[in-house]
Structure formats: structure tokens, C-alpha cells
Amino acid sequence: MVKILNVHNLEKSYFSGSKKLNILKDISFSVKAQDTFAIVGPSGSGKTTLLGLCAGLDQPDSGIIELCNIETTSLTEDERAQLRNQKVGFIFQDFQLLPTLTALENVAVPLELQGDKQASKKATTLLEKVGLAKRLSHYPSQLSGGEQQRVALARAFSNSPTILFADEPTGNLDAETGDKVIQLLFDLNKELGTTLVIVTHDIELAKKTNHILKLKGGRIVEDTKLA
Image 1 (cartoon, rainbow, N blue to C red):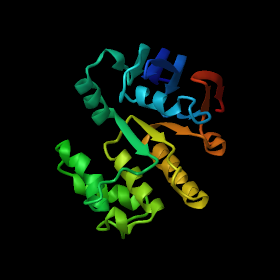
Image 2: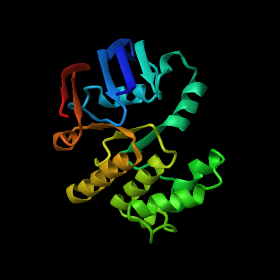
Image 3: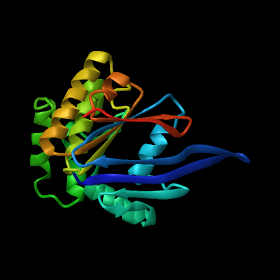
Image 4: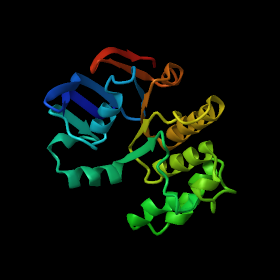
């Protein structure tokens, strides 16, 4: 199976005043195409930092990241942004919807910016898939948390990403709503043949994936394939 994400000997640190904080140390792993992959660990273990590096939102101090067979660590910021637009989808804990746009517009606008003439039609189809056919013209403030995250799901899949990164996707949802959103996420992922990488502190959610990577203190302490 083709590897969509390869990470080799990743290191990342930040300075807090004059003190150097080592966030990630000697991280290496790979994710296969159409795999479901969870990154777990306690708060402060480096999960979100690792996700940002893998997605090309930030650069490591050292090490190599290959995303969709492209070494992102040698790209400029603009080149990484172009790769994300073409290959990557995102889902965040806080939804990150534009409050002045309707549900339909929130999903369609990224497609319109790419010049897609079918943007509105594709957005409508995706919102129907996540059960929001009757909420297309509603603004985020008129939607529940679960509905907002479903809009975010539709938007994440709108550019038919090769890989989708989800950072604590149920963090702001109650358990029942979170379960429904996760089921939708996995169903869409399977239907569209996407590769899914989830950062979560929820072990039960992680167990739904094929592969779990556990971090502690910025290091890998477990690398478990479940399927």
C-alpha cells in the first residue's frame, strides 16, 4: 500500500524566554493510503504540534516529512499552502466557520476560490450527506455545535482531499453528538477514499482507527497497528 505520510527523525523545539522547550524528539512513523490513524497522549505531549508539522502548517527544526510523496520540509511557505489546498482537509475542535456565511457558503467558498464552477452543487451534496439538507441557508450562530461540526466536516471533504487531519474533532461536543459526528467522519472517509489522521485524548475514539501512535513528553511511547 502506498504511504501518504512519512515522518523521519522529527525534532521541534520552542523558546520560552531564554529557555529552550523540546516539544518533539526523534519522531518517525508512516501512514498508508486510506488508513485511519490516531495520535494520542496527555496534554502537552506534542500531539497538536505534530499534526501541524505533518500538515505543513509549520516546519520542524530537523527531520523529514513527506506528504503525498512531496518532501514538505524543502518547500517554501507558499508551496506548502498550495499543497494543502490541493491535497489536505482540516477539521478543528472549534469548527472555524465564518460567522457571516451560511452553511452552504462556508462549504462552497473554498471551492469557488479554486475556480470550481460546480462549487454550490458540490457543497449542497456534501451537506446533504451529513444530514443538513434543510439547514443550507442557516448561519453558524443558528446551528448547534454538532451541526456546526457537520458543516466543518462537509467543508473538509469539499476539495476531495488525499489526507484529512482532525484535531480533537469532538472536543467541544457532548458524548452523543460527538459519536454521531465521528460516525459521519469515518463513513465519509471510507466513501471518498481519504486517509484520516486524528489527534485525540479519547482512547475509545482512537480504537476506532487502524493505527494508534501514543506520545508522552514529546516522544513515541507506543506504535500500535490495530488492523
